Length: 186
Image 1: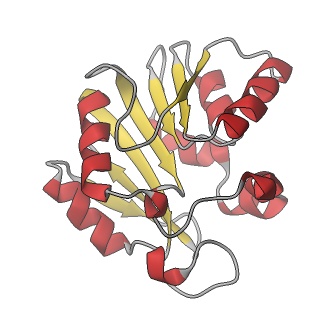
Image 2: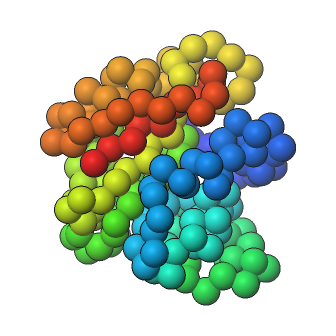
């Protein structure tokens, strides 16, 4: 693996610029009306999407991250937000510590470029996703810019669509801003 987000840069995950580029309520609206649906937020970090997602559903939100430091920050933020339906899971994306068909939606924001095995990761997402469920896969456009990871490790939207198709899923691209894209898969 050539790049992993440094928790020391946590402030970047909560910046006003990010909120403008990826407004949580608008992005999460792509899941539809969740009701009592369960979700996995893979690579949840400090809970940028986790907490708003937990407020949208009466179901469980599994907050997965490889960093115990990020999960500790999330725990504090969940308590501050008075949210009770979030369960932290220390887990990587390639071997998700959840049962088969346990969630109705998988969210993975700006993490896939960090995984060692993209094919295995998408296979895991499909394994934990219930039939008829949705995935929101958010990634950086594969172009040079000041923000984000090095361009050489980014995944183009066409490439991610190919991986999604190879995993037996259908996907479409949504572009919330010029620098990132979302693959909505089912």
